[in-house]
Length: 278
Ligand SMILES: C[S@@+](CC[C@H](N)C(=O)[O-])C[C@H]1O[C@@H](n2cnc3c(N)ncnc32)[C@H](O)[C@@H]1O
Image (cartoon, rainbow, N blue to C red; front, side, top):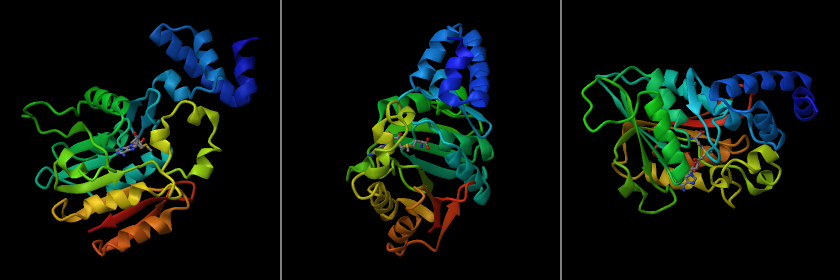
Protein backbone atom coordinates (compact mmCIF):
# COMPACT_ATOMS: atom_id res chain seq x y z
CA UNK A 1 0.00 0.00 0.00
CA UNK A 2 1.34 3.52 -0.74
CA UNK A 3 2.89 5.22 2.31
CA UNK A 4 0.40 8.09 2.40
CA UNK A 5 -2.55 5.70 2.33
CA UNK A 6 -1.05 3.65 5.19
CA UNK A 7 -0.49 6.74 7.33
CA UNK A 8 -3.95 8.10 6.46
CA UNK A 9 -5.53 4.95 7.89
CA UNK A 10 -3.83 5.78 11.21
CA UNK A 11 -3.93 9.57 11.29
CA UNK A 12 -6.51 10.93 8.88
CA UNK A 13 -5.64 12.71 5.62
CA UNK A 14 -4.27 16.08 6.71
CA UNK A 15 -2.15 14.82 9.65
CA UNK A 16 -0.86 11.94 7.48
CA UNK A 17 0.25 14.36 4.74
CA UNK A 18 2.05 16.60 7.26
CA UNK A 19 3.80 13.72 9.04
CA UNK A 20 4.87 12.07 5.81
CA UNK A 21 6.55 15.31 4.77
CA UNK A 22 8.48 15.50 8.08
CA UNK A 23 9.36 11.81 7.95
CA UNK A 24 10.70 12.13 4.38
CA UNK A 25 12.79 15.17 5.31
CA UNK A 26 14.22 13.37 8.35
CA UNK A 27 14.89 10.18 6.36
CA UNK A 28 16.84 12.20 3.80
CA UNK A 29 18.91 14.07 6.40
CA UNK A 30 19.60 10.99 8.55
CA UNK A 31 20.00 8.65 5.54
CA UNK A 32 17.27 6.34 6.78
CA UNK A 33 14.60 4.49 4.85
CA UNK A 34 11.24 6.29 4.66
CA UNK A 35 9.50 2.88 4.61
CA UNK A 36 11.16 1.86 7.89
CA UNK A 37 10.18 5.12 9.55
CA UNK A 38 6.58 4.79 8.36
CA UNK A 39 6.54 1.19 9.66
CA UNK A 40 7.59 2.49 13.08
CA UNK A 41 4.83 5.12 13.00
CA UNK A 42 2.28 2.46 11.99
CA UNK A 43 3.30 0.55 15.14
CA UNK A 44 2.16 3.60 17.20
CA UNK A 45 5.62 4.98 17.89
CA UNK A 46 5.31 8.72 18.62
CA UNK A 47 6.45 10.90 15.72
CA UNK A 48 8.85 12.76 18.04
CA UNK A 49 10.84 9.58 18.78
CA UNK A 50 11.03 8.87 15.06
CA UNK A 51 12.24 12.39 14.22
CA UNK A 52 14.44 12.52 17.34
CA UNK A 53 13.51 16.05 18.45
CA UNK A 54 10.67 18.09 19.88
CA UNK A 55 10.50 21.91 19.76
CA UNK A 56 10.28 23.41 23.26
CA UNK A 57 10.08 27.20 23.04
CA UNK A 58 12.87 28.15 20.63
CA UNK A 59 14.90 25.04 21.56
CA UNK A 60 14.94 21.76 19.68
CA UNK A 61 15.07 19.18 22.46
CA UNK A 62 16.45 15.74 21.63
CA UNK A 63 14.05 12.95 22.51
CA UNK A 64 14.55 9.21 22.71
CA UNK A 65 12.37 6.42 24.15
CA UNK A 66 11.61 5.87 26.96
CA UNK A 67 12.32 9.42 28.23
CA UNK A 68 9.12 11.49 28.38
CA UNK A 69 8.50 13.70 25.33
CA UNK A 70 8.17 17.33 26.50
CA UNK A 71 4.56 18.48 26.28
CA UNK A 72 3.18 21.86 25.05
CA UNK A 73 1.50 22.41 28.46
CA UNK A 74 4.93 22.26 30.13
CA UNK A 75 6.44 24.56 27.51
CA UNK A 76 3.65 27.09 28.18
CA UNK A 77 4.15 27.33 31.97
CA UNK A 78 7.94 27.30 31.69
CA UNK A 79 7.76 30.40 29.45
CA UNK A 80 5.26 31.99 31.85
CA UNK A 81 7.62 31.28 34.78
CA UNK A 82 10.53 32.85 32.89
CA UNK A 83 8.44 36.04 32.60
CA UNK A 84 7.04 35.96 36.16
CA UNK A 85 10.44 35.99 37.85
CA UNK A 86 13.72 37.14 36.48
CA UNK A 87 17.22 36.58 37.81
CA UNK A 88 20.13 38.83 36.82
CA UNK A 89 23.88 38.20 36.72
CA UNK A 90 24.11 40.40 39.84
CA UNK A 91 21.36 38.38 41.56
CA UNK A 92 21.63 34.92 39.99
CA UNK A 93 19.28 32.01 40.73
CA UNK A 94 20.17 28.50 41.76
CA UNK A 95 17.50 26.28 40.23
CA UNK A 96 16.55 22.67 41.02
CA UNK A 97 14.35 20.70 38.59
CA UNK A 98 12.97 17.48 40.07
CA UNK A 99 12.29 14.69 37.53
CA UNK A 100 14.13 16.49 34.74
CA UNK A 101 13.60 13.96 31.90
CA UNK A 102 15.10 15.52 28.76
CA UNK A 103 16.09 18.57 30.84
CA UNK A 104 13.57 20.66 28.86
CA UNK A 105 12.39 22.89 31.76
CA UNK A 106 15.78 24.04 33.14
CA UNK A 107 17.33 24.23 29.65
CA UNK A 108 14.57 26.50 28.37
CA UNK A 109 14.99 28.70 31.47
CA UNK A 110 18.77 28.75 30.86
CA UNK A 111 17.99 29.93 27.32
CA UNK A 112 15.37 32.55 28.27
CA UNK A 113 17.02 34.11 31.32
CA UNK A 114 19.98 36.48 30.94
CA UNK A 115 23.46 35.00 30.52
CA UNK A 116 25.18 34.31 33.82
CA UNK A 117 21.93 34.48 35.81
CA UNK A 118 21.15 30.81 36.48
CA UNK A 119 22.92 27.68 37.53
CA UNK A 120 20.55 24.73 37.19
CA UNK A 121 20.56 21.19 38.49
CA UNK A 122 18.19 18.55 37.10
CA UNK A 123 17.63 15.35 39.06
CA UNK A 124 16.14 12.08 37.92
CA UNK A 125 16.11 8.38 38.82
CA UNK A 126 16.31 7.29 35.19
CA UNK A 127 19.74 6.79 33.63
CA UNK A 128 18.20 7.27 30.17
CA UNK A 129 16.90 10.68 31.29
CA UNK A 130 20.20 11.71 32.89
CA UNK A 131 22.16 10.80 29.73
CA UNK A 132 19.68 12.57 27.44
CA UNK A 133 19.48 15.74 29.57
CA UNK A 134 23.30 15.95 29.50
CA UNK A 135 23.24 15.57 25.69
CA UNK A 136 20.64 18.34 25.47
CA UNK A 137 22.66 20.61 27.77
CA UNK A 138 25.72 20.09 25.57
CA UNK A 139 23.78 20.61 22.34
CA UNK A 140 22.56 23.99 23.62
CA UNK A 141 25.85 25.08 25.23
CA UNK A 142 24.72 24.87 28.87
CA UNK A 143 26.77 21.91 30.13
CA UNK A 144 28.69 22.74 33.26
CA UNK A 145 32.45 22.65 32.73
CA UNK A 146 35.09 21.96 35.39
CA UNK A 147 35.86 25.69 35.56
CA UNK A 148 33.46 28.21 34.05
CA UNK A 149 35.20 31.42 33.13
CA UNK A 150 32.54 32.75 30.78
CA UNK A 151 29.36 34.49 31.87
CA UNK A 152 26.83 31.82 30.95
CA UNK A 153 23.99 29.73 32.27
CA UNK A 154 24.74 26.15 33.18
CA UNK A 155 22.99 22.84 33.76
CA UNK A 156 24.12 19.68 35.45
CA UNK A 157 22.26 16.37 35.78
CA UNK A 158 22.39 14.41 39.03
CA UNK A 159 20.93 11.04 39.97
CA UNK A 160 18.62 11.50 42.95
CA UNK A 161 15.33 10.02 44.13
CA UNK A 162 12.85 12.52 45.57
CA UNK A 163 11.06 9.69 47.41
CA UNK A 164 14.26 8.72 49.24
CA UNK A 165 14.51 10.28 52.74
CA UNK A 166 18.22 10.92 52.01
CA UNK A 167 17.39 13.02 48.88
CA UNK A 168 18.94 16.23 50.23
CA UNK A 169 22.37 14.60 50.52
CA UNK A 170 22.42 14.11 46.70
CA UNK A 171 21.82 17.78 45.88
CA UNK A 172 23.40 21.05 46.90
CA UNK A 173 20.93 23.47 48.53
CA UNK A 174 20.01 26.28 49.00
CA UNK A 175 17.94 26.97 45.86
CA UNK A 176 16.03 30.06 44.71
CA UNK A 177 13.68 28.20 42.36
CA UNK A 178 12.38 24.63 42.39
CA UNK A 179 10.51 23.36 39.35
CA UNK A 180 8.98 19.96 38.78
CA UNK A 181 6.74 18.14 36.37
CA UNK A 182 6.53 14.98 38.47
CA UNK A 183 4.74 11.79 37.46
CA UNK A 184 1.08 12.54 38.31
CA UNK A 185 -1.21 10.30 36.28
CA UNK A 186 -3.68 8.43 38.53
CA UNK A 187 -3.99 4.68 38.02
CA UNK A 188 -7.51 4.81 36.49
CA UNK A 189 -6.27 7.28 33.82
CA UNK A 190 -3.01 5.37 33.30
CA UNK A 191 -5.03 2.37 32.07
CA UNK A 192 -6.73 4.54 29.43
CA UNK A 193 -3.60 6.15 27.98
CA UNK A 194 -3.15 5.90 24.19
CA UNK A 195 -0.84 3.05 23.15
CA UNK A 196 1.68 5.53 21.72
CA UNK A 197 2.19 6.74 25.30
CA UNK A 198 1.88 3.56 27.37
CA UNK A 199 4.02 1.42 25.03
CA UNK A 200 6.84 3.89 24.48
CA UNK A 201 7.14 6.33 27.41
CA UNK A 202 8.57 5.21 30.74
CA UNK A 203 5.82 4.29 33.26
CA UNK A 204 8.11 5.80 35.92
CA UNK A 205 7.66 9.16 34.17
CA UNK A 206 3.88 8.91 34.09
CA UNK A 207 2.26 7.03 36.96
CA UNK A 208 1.97 9.26 40.04
CA UNK A 209 1.37 6.49 42.58
CA UNK A 210 -1.63 4.95 44.34
CA UNK A 211 -2.71 8.15 46.16
CA UNK A 212 -4.73 9.30 43.11
CA UNK A 213 -1.46 10.13 41.35
CA UNK A 214 -0.56 12.68 44.05
CA UNK A 215 2.24 10.77 45.80
CA UNK A 216 5.11 12.98 44.62
CA UNK A 217 3.78 16.34 45.84
CA UNK A 218 4.01 15.79 49.63
CA UNK A 219 7.54 14.38 49.11
CA UNK A 220 8.63 17.43 47.08
CA UNK A 221 7.03 19.92 49.49
CA UNK A 222 8.56 18.17 52.52
CA UNK A 223 12.03 18.52 51.01
CA UNK A 224 11.76 22.12 49.93
CA UNK A 225 10.28 23.33 53.23
CA UNK A 226 13.19 21.88 55.22
CA UNK A 227 15.23 24.57 56.95
CA UNK A 228 17.93 25.91 54.65
CA UNK A 229 16.71 24.15 51.49
CA UNK A 230 15.34 27.31 49.84
CA UNK A 231 16.72 30.82 49.91
CA UNK A 232 14.52 33.70 51.14
CA UNK A 233 11.67 34.50 48.72
CA UNK A 234 12.04 31.07 47.12
CA UNK A 235 9.84 30.21 44.14
CA UNK A 236 8.15 26.88 43.39
CA UNK A 237 6.41 25.81 40.18
CA UNK A 238 4.82 22.36 40.10
CA UNK A 239 2.96 20.91 37.12
CA UNK A 240 -0.28 19.14 38.05
CA UNK A 241 -2.95 16.97 36.49
CA UNK A 242 -6.07 18.90 35.57
CA UNK A 243 -8.00 17.77 38.67
CA UNK A 244 -5.17 18.05 41.19
CA UNK A 245 -4.97 21.84 41.66
CA UNK A 246 -6.91 22.10 44.92
CA UNK A 247 -5.10 19.13 46.50
CA UNK A 248 -1.63 20.43 45.65
CA UNK A 249 -2.61 23.97 46.72
CA UNK A 250 -3.65 22.47 50.09
CA UNK A 251 -0.41 20.49 50.47
CA UNK A 252 1.59 23.72 50.04
CA UNK A 253 -0.73 25.85 52.19
CA UNK A 254 -0.69 23.41 55.13
CA UNK A 255 3.05 23.96 55.57
CA UNK A 256 2.43 27.62 56.45
CA UNK A 257 5.64 28.52 54.58
CA UNK A 258 4.20 30.14 51.44
CA UNK A 259 3.12 33.80 51.19
CA UNK A 260 1.42 33.43 47.85
CA UNK A 261 0.03 30.34 46.09
CA UNK A 262 -1.74 30.48 42.74
CA UNK A 263 -2.92 28.01 40.13
CA UNK A 264 -2.09 28.68 36.47
CA UNK A 265 -4.22 27.38 33.63
CA UNK A 266 -2.78 25.87 30.47
CA UNK A 267 -3.70 27.27 27.01
CA UNK A 268 -6.66 24.86 26.92
CA UNK A 269 -8.19 26.34 30.08
CA UNK A 270 -7.21 23.44 32.37
CA UNK A 271 -5.45 23.89 35.71
CA UNK A 272 -1.84 22.96 35.03
CA UNK A 273 0.65 24.55 37.42
CA UNK A 274 0.77 25.47 41.08
CA UNK A 275 3.03 28.50 41.49
CA UNK A 276 4.09 29.58 44.99
CA UNK A 277 6.37 32.14 46.64
CA UNK A 278 7.90 31.67 50.08
C1 LIG B 1 6.47 13.62 33.87
S1 LIG B 1 8.18 13.26 33.63
C2 LIG B 1 8.78 14.93 33.38
C3 LIG B 1 10.02 15.01 32.53
C4 LIG B 1 10.40 16.46 32.13
N1 LIG B 1 10.61 17.27 33.31
C5 LIG B 1 9.31 17.08 31.27
O1 LIG B 1 8.58 17.95 31.77
O2 LIG B 1 9.19 16.67 30.10
C6 LIG B 1 8.70 12.85 35.24
C7 LIG B 1 10.17 12.53 35.43
O3 LIG B 1 10.38 12.19 36.81
C8 LIG B 1 11.32 11.13 36.89
N2 LIG B 1 11.11 10.44 38.17
C9 LIG B 1 10.25 9.42 38.44
N3 LIG B 1 10.35 9.05 39.73
C10 LIG B 1 11.30 9.85 40.28
C11 LIG B 1 11.85 9.94 41.59
N4 LIG B 1 11.44 9.13 42.55
N5 LIG B 1 12.81 10.87 41.83
C12 LIG B 1 13.25 11.69 40.81
N6 LIG B 1 12.75 11.64 39.57
C13 LIG B 1 11.79 10.74 39.30
C14 LIG B 1 11.02 10.27 35.67
O4 LIG B 1 12.11 9.44 35.35
C15 LIG B 1 10.69 11.35 34.63
O5 LIG B 1 11.85 11.71 33.90
